Length: 158
Image (tube, rainbow, N blue to C red; front, side):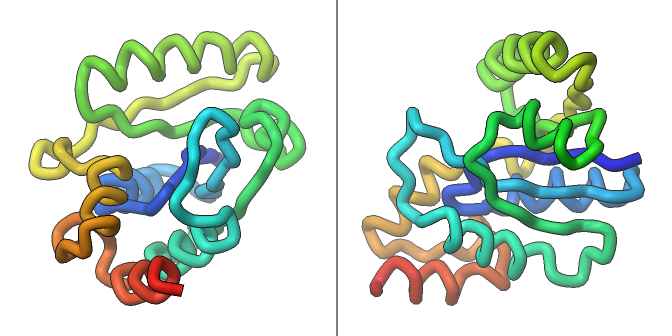
């Protein structure tokens, strides 16, 4: 079964990587796609986020990465994907993602969403917090995948 893990991934975090790895252990093919969200002002370009995702998932043989300006349901349909995987950190995530999953099921012709709870030791990690750490020049160890740290600093200081 092919699944899609959609998100903005601005930037990818250890929480994201945990969900990606766990999905890769359950499903045959996992596509991680950084979507352009017009409601957010990203720190990194879509191309940079794709590069960070690829570096972070290197070695996961059944994981591919992509970027898209499409709606998630349209991307999934175009790629023959029938299910999404979303990580849930807390009740706020649950309420938001449950609503989105319901809408996706309607507009995605039955597109299903599988929720994976984040590991307790990672539930405090968010891209918002990581962006603040980057802006203030703080260490990223324990917040983002090791393979992404040097890339993030190189991209941010350009």
